[in-house]
Image 1 (cartoon, rainbow over the protein chains, first blue to last red):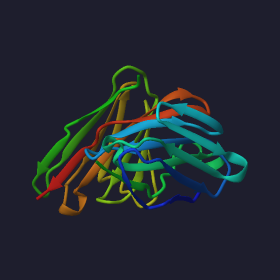
Image 2 (image 1 turned 180 degrees about the vertical axis):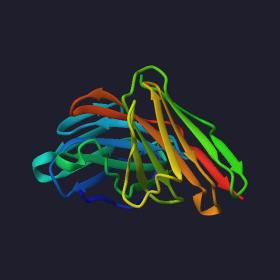
Image 3 (image 1 turned 90 degrees about the vertical axis):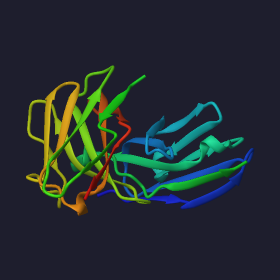
Image 4 (image 1 turned 60 degrees about the horizontal axis):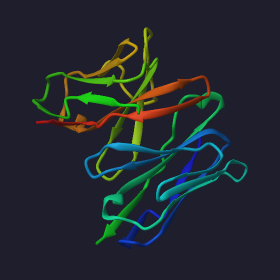
Length: 111
Length: 117
């Protein structure tokens, strides 16, 4: 199956700082989602981005499918951004329908 | 928006008993739902894919007789953990697929924390 690698595994920031999270995947994909899991366990949809760039408030995401990576940018971090960020691509073929989750990036934003 | 609910949010049960977890898509119909399990400080692991009106598809290594899945309607899937044991204690999360064909998003419920004593 598709392999997903996220970096960095941990990131500690001061409020107001910017950050870039990376997701590398081993196979071609026809879907990719970014999620934020808050401290209570809820996964929140951030982006559905199989290719291209999208912006939403202080965050944006870019997926370069041909080079098999996606980036999540968070600007002007706030303490409420803390949590785990997961990248989950979906490959075609026999894996059709299944998202494969990376191990996540744990983001901690200090006031 | 796309809202998925789960009930209960937290359950404690005794070893040997069964527990049922409900997953509902509140504002959209979902022919396909997914059940995940997450251990502390780990990623989500897909357990099974639940299709409305048909049998669930289980991932390798997941015991289908232990984790019973029923997708009885376009808005409800249930996971029953039968004869629960302490090693079944975990965070169980469902998700529902919104959209059709190859172009869809998954939306997640808030999770159910199961503790088996």
